[in-house]
Amino acid sequence: MIEEKKILLHTCCAPCAAGSWERLREQGYVVTFLYSNSNIYPRAEYDIRLENIRKFADAIGIELLCDTYDHDSWLKRVQGLEQEPEKGGRCTVCFEFNLERAAFFAEKEKIGSFTTTLTVSPHKESRMIFDAGERFSRYLAVDFKEKGGHKRSSVLCREYGLYRQSYCGCEFSLRDRERGETGG
Image 1 (cartoon, helix red, strand yellow):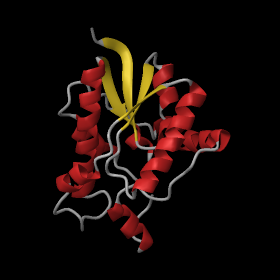
Image 2 (cartoon, rainbow, N blue to C red):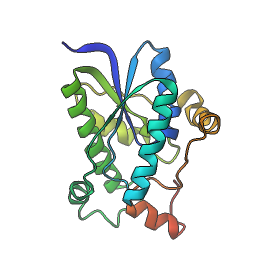
Image 3 (tube, one colour):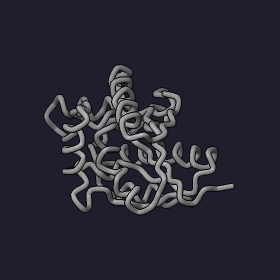
Image 4 (cartoon, rainbow, N blue to C red):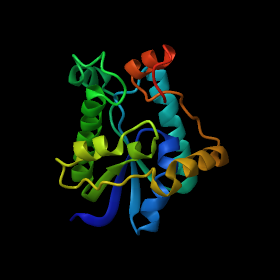
């Protein structure tokens, strides 16, 4: 039986989860986090983000599901898009990859709907994420930037002592950041 008031929240990191989960809870949802981020590079960055989402989930009493790290599959999916700029075609494919994984977990866990924390970032175009999510019947489009979501994220990061990364996560955004070409 599918639980309609449960929602799976794909989380890219603890800061984005911190700025998103409260709004869903206020709307009456029972939130489960999903850490599914095969795009993150290097593995040490993936691991520190995982450690911090675990810390946050434990602190607020939310269940955390973890997907398998499969960076090679993600690289195959974005092959040919390595030179795309941030907010370009590579990001669209990355969003689709992560939302596809979230859709799989929502189905597997019999959770009524899912969404993603990616929209809380001021460096992400929410419309691109919504467009990527439209192909999934259980996807709920929520713009977590609205209502001060990013600002709330910053407050909660300080309160819980959460690690804040300085780039999106993939090696291409890291490369561009090191060149001074993108945000985080």
